[in-house]
Length: 402
Ligand code: ATP
Ligand code: MG
Image (cartoon, rainbow, N blue to C red):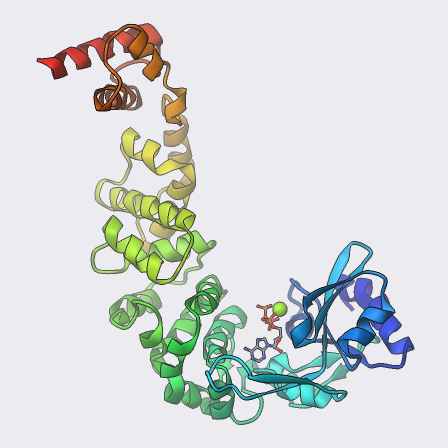
């Protein structure tokens, strides 16, 4: 057992000692068998939520209406979910009702893919009711039960399939792939934020091309925000020599770049449609600007370096490297380090200094003069020293007045 399971074992033992069943389930069992690092340990139990809460001193109701209780144990939190069945799914995304049951099999049946429907006893014994082990070994994603029905119940599962294809370097078996093709349009029922999580995981996965090929083959991409006309961009991605995207920022920078006109307004429109944070929008807008400079000039001016900042510059270079016009990162680090200042607050004079010497009156003129000073320092025309800058400011202010 991996260390995470060892640490959680006393929790399962406590539940079992009280006469209930308790298992590790889902992604953590899959990843343990694959020898991959775990990010979360999920527990499933026949005990009902109130029964779980009665067994432990410290619990948190993280999703009690779905049967999930977090058990706090020695500084760790374990999401523990009562066996349940789901029914209804009239909106193609979530069940109308969930029912708590005492049967592990019923619980495993509602899970998406056979490789995610494995359970493990606290003693390490694997419970494999849907031949998930064989699929895991063969590298196959197969819906549990009738694929068509499963994607009708929850259309997000189609995105999860292509995401796992990329993350695990797995094949989607033919009937499951066909069901995605037949039901792709249902993806538009799913909240953009949930689709986005899967899309980002696909593109940061170990074999993104595998996920993208499935996305193209099933035409699932047509139902993703602002992607319907992006077949050429996706095909370009598939054709690039082996690549890997390290961050979500690099994902969106590359996607924005491959669109027809990566102007700031279009970048913003794309990311707004995907409901990303404003912080990400700013980062990607800056990175796309840097990418243009790297592509056209092979380097950035000091003004561009200053405006873009080191983080977005690094993202841009990661993407440029994939596209074949990257630079050694050390060159960019050095160019950035060589900037006279890295932040406008480092300017040796401020608005107050200008007013004190009556070089400007408060208002837009002041902003203009300060901007001119900042630019002069960044571009190396004037040293960042207050006496030199005040002389320069006087000159700028005079020329504006005439
Ligand atoms: P990850 O490595 O991203 O955490 P995961 O398989 O653990 O992958 P989770 O979203 O953490 O994914 O879900 C845990 C488990 O819950 C899954 O392994 C699967 O058994 C089940 N599950 C999650 N989402 C769905 C879904 N949309 N439909 C059916 N079962 C699901
Ligand atoms: Mg998980």
